[in-house]
Length: 133
Image (tube, rainbow, N blue to C red; front, side, top):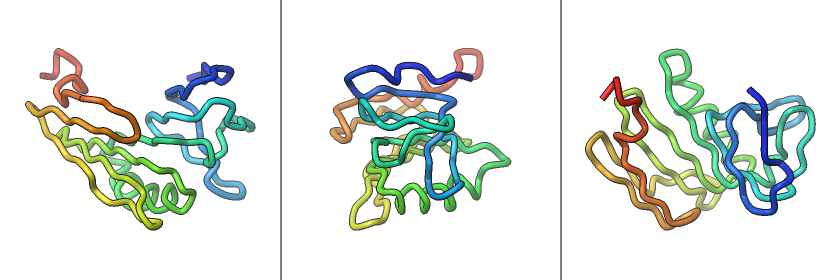
C-alpha cells in the first residue's frame, strides 16, 4: 500500500504509512491523520505531526493494539487513539497528562459523536462491509 497526500496543506488521513515512534522503531497503524507538512522519511511520519492513530484489533494483534501500541503512542504525544475491537465496539481515547483516557465508546447499532480532534459522527455499522452486517 502506498501513502498519498503528503503535500496537502490540511490534515490528511492515511492508511499503509508508518509513524516513527522512537529510534529505529516504527509502527504502521490501520489509519492515521497527520498535520500538513509533517516530516516524512523512511516510509513513515514523525510522531510530532500525527493527530490521530486508529487500530482495528485482530486475533494476532490483541496485545499490541490494546496495550503496547497505545503506551508507545502516548509516550510520543499523539493526542487521539481510536480502537475497533473484534465485536465492533469502537473506543476513542484522548491523551491527558501523558495517558490515554476513554472519551467515547459505541457498539453495533449505535452512533458515536465526537467534538475532538474534530467534530465527527460515526455509525459503527458503517465500519462493517455490507455482506457482514
